[in-house]
Amino acid sequence: MVAIPFPLTSAPGGLPHTGAGRLINCYHEPLAAGARSANVWRRAPGLRSWGASGQSGNRGQIVVGSTLYAAFADNVTSFDASATATNVGTFPGTRKVFWARNNRAPTPDVVAVDIDNGARVITASSVLDYPDADLPQPNSVCFLDGYFFFTIGDGRCFASDLNSTSVSSTNFITCESKPDSLMRAVAFGDLHLCGTGSIEVWHDTAEPTGFPFSRVQVIPRGIIGPHAISGFEDGIGRGLVFVGDDRCVYALNGYSPDKVSTPDVDRAIESFAQTNDPADIEMFPYVVGGHSCIVLRSPAWTWVLDLETTHWHERASYGSPTWRATSACNVFGKWLAGDGDSGDLVEITDAAADETGNPLICRIESGPVSAFPNRVSVMEGTFDIAQGVGIASGADPTQTDPSVEIEWSDDGGLSWSVPLVRKLGPQSQISGPIKVCKTGMTGNQGRRWRLTVSDAVDVELTGGDMSAELRAG
Image 1: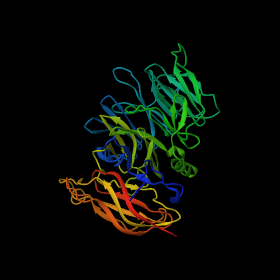
Image 2: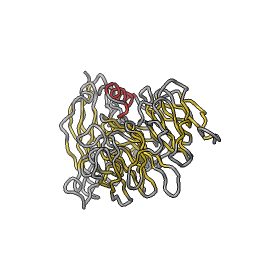
Image 3: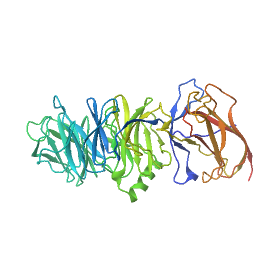
Image 4: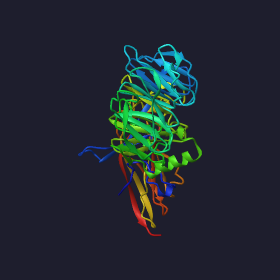
C-alpha cells in the first residue's frame, strides 16, 4: 500500500505535469495528536441568503451602530439586524467604494468614496454631495484617531477636522518618498498611505496645527491596485496582507513585507494583470470555524490564504471560474458579503454546505504517486473519508443518501477517467471502506486521484492509499 499524497496547499502547477494537487472549495487543517490522521481536508464554508436589496452590483458595505449601509450600482441601501432593506438614495457609479465613519456624537458622519465620482456623505435617508468644496476629488478614504483621511491620485493626503467633515484646503501632506501616485489610505494602528511603488507609514503625533500625523517609515513596496489589501478590518485585525507592485502577495511583519504567495498564486496574478485592470483584483477577510482567511479574488479566479496554516486553497462557484462572494465585512455577529450572482447579501458560514441552493462542489486532487520512469499496476484505491454524513431531514437523495465521485489520471492530470460513484451513507450509517478496484496500469506520469462531492453534506477526508505493483518499462 502506498499513501496518496493529498496537498496541504493548492498547487496546480504551471502545467499539470508539475502540479502537486489542488484544493477547490476545501481546505487543509492539522489534527491533534492521537487523531486517526495528522491531517484532514474539509469542505470550505458555504453561502446562505441573508438580505435582499432589490439592487445589483455590490460595491461594498459598512456597519454603523445597528445599521448596515451597502453600496450597489448607482445606489445605497441600508439594512437593520433583521435584514430589512431601506433604499437610502442614488450614488453614481458601479466600481467598488471605500467607506469610513467618524466618532461624532450622537450621530457619526458616514463617508463613501467612488474613484470615478468622488466622495458622498451617507445619512439614514439620503446620499449627499460632500459638503466641503476644499476637498479635491479623492480616490479613497479611511478613519483614524478622529480624522477622515482622503487620498488624491497626485500623492496628496488630506485630513479632516476632528470628528468633522470639514477639510481645510491647506491641511494635507504629500507622499514624496517615491515619485508614485497614491491609491489607498488604510488605518491599522498607524496610517498607511499606499502608492504604486511604496507604502508610507504615518503616526499620530498630535501636531497642534496642520496635518496631525508625522511620517515614521517608508516601505519600499507598493500595491498593485486600490482594493488589493486586507487584514485590517474589524473582526480579523491580523495585520496587512496585500498584492505588491511586483504581483506577489505580502504580509507586513512590522515594517517588513514578507512574501506569502506561492508560485501558483503569483502566476495567477501575473496572468490576469497582463491583460486586465489590476483594480479588478480585490482582497477581503472572513473568519469561520477558527480559520482567519484572506480572500484574493478576480473575475478569473479566487484564492484564499488561511492565516492559521499559511496554506492556500481555491474557490469557485457553480458554473463560474471565480467565487461569487465579494466585499465581506463582520456585522451582527456574522460575515456578510455581496453576492456576485444577485443583489442579495449572503452570509459566509460553515452551517451551509451549498451556496444559496446551488451546489458547492468540493474537489480534492492529489499529487502523483509515481515510480518514474516505471509504470505501476493499481489494484485498489482506498479513501478514508467520513461516512454516515447524510441528513435524514435533508433534500432527497442528495442529502439523505450522498455520494462521492472518484476519478484518476495517468497522464499528469491532462485527462481523467469516467468518475466512479461511491455512497457516503445515510445519516449515522457506516459501511465498508470507500474504495475502487482494478483501475489498470498507470503511464510513466504516475497516478493522480480526484475526489468530488457535490451533495450538500459535511466532507472530511483524512487520507488515502493505493495498492500498487511496480512494472518495468
